[in-house]
Image (cartoon, rainbow, N blue to C red):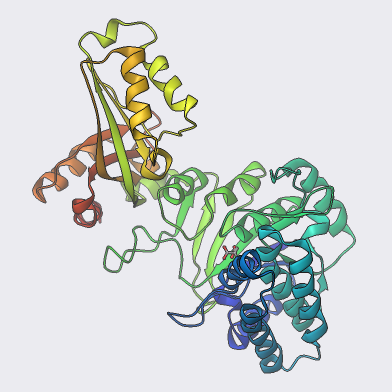
Amino acid sequence: MAVKVVKFGGTSMADAGAINQVADIVKSDPERRYVVVSAPGKRFSGDTKVTDLLYACYHDLEINGECSATFAKIRERFEGIVKDLGLDLDMKPILDEVEKKMVINYSVDYCASRGEYLSAIVLAKKLGFEFVDAEKIMIFDVNGNFMSEQTNELVAKTLKDIKCAVIPGFYGADGTGSIHTFSRGGSDITGAVVARAADAVIYENWTDVDGFMSADPRIVENPTIIKKLSYKELRELAYMGANVLHPEAVFPVKASGIPINIRNTFNPQAPGTLIVAEVEEDEFAKRQITGVAGKKGYSIIFIEKELMNSELGFGRRVLSVLEYYNILFEHMPSGIGTLSIVVSDSELAGKEDVVLERIRNIVKPDNIEIKSGISLISTVGHGMSFRPGTAAKLCEALAKANINIRMIDQGSSELNIIVAVATQDYEKAVNAIYHAFA
Ligand code: ASP
């Protein structure tokens, strides 16, 4: 029988009503055999996610050596869910053990991972599926790096003998048994890893929106849902802030060409967004761009030097300074006598002066400065390749909105055009670009 791997996010696991919905979705298709879950998320705006409560527990442990007051809120959440679901499951000993181990283990990753652990125990009971602990199958090294190939083999071997299972997302363990987590939102990665190992026909990622939107709905009113996009487009949009799916969740499924389907737990009839290796040509003929995404919080290191173009190794010497200070950069457009390096403020924080000083010493520029308050906007779509006029249309839209482009960058793959604008123009610029292509 074909296998579908399904992952449910925090809102889908937030309370008994949502979990009943999840159970209906899983049970309505016998191919939905392996279920990956997040910790319960927010039930209403202003509510706190269980994972955030767990980070608060760790903080309490650091200060007081105990966390019972904060942990009481987690107890209440899970006991309430189990009671409302009417499950014959005594959560008390399970929660007692988790609290005890949090004090003994006293590691931030251990604490943070317990929301997924508890969530999966509850859903496994509700569905009558086997609970498979992620610490037994998701392998990290002792430094917290995920070991994808070893994990793939182990998950495949383990699931071969299990018909239906619920697996907690977000974490795994190293050879010594210590727990490690992915970065926030990492249950999406677990789902993708399980989909690859189980050789799934599809990886369904169930969330609380109807699909991947072509722009941020907090900025653009009613953006369209993208019906189909490629892994590459998804990666570009997710990296630039479209946060329906963790940006790293693409890699495991991409390796074996498993499509990802973003679905809405609260509107299961909607087809959602399908993410595939290749989108058909005619789909692109209909649309020039697939989506727009962006992020605030960047700076440009602007370097000017006459005749830098004829100085062999100029760029390498500049970049060696960033490497020395462990700073990742995003883009590096250049002119004959100028070089602009775009870096995020968080990468540069506290290192501005030393970086400028060292670049000055190494390449002796005529002028060097950091221009801050920059936002990046990425306009993404395979449809723009070999189609003249995309950049022109984009620039015209920004000009009409009276927005100055501080930098523009288009890779030769023609998958995206990135512009930098002043942060005060960010929302206006995203709207201008979106509406130009809508
Ligand atoms: N619960 C974790 C978080 O809040 C992981 C996840 O939901 O994917 O980030």
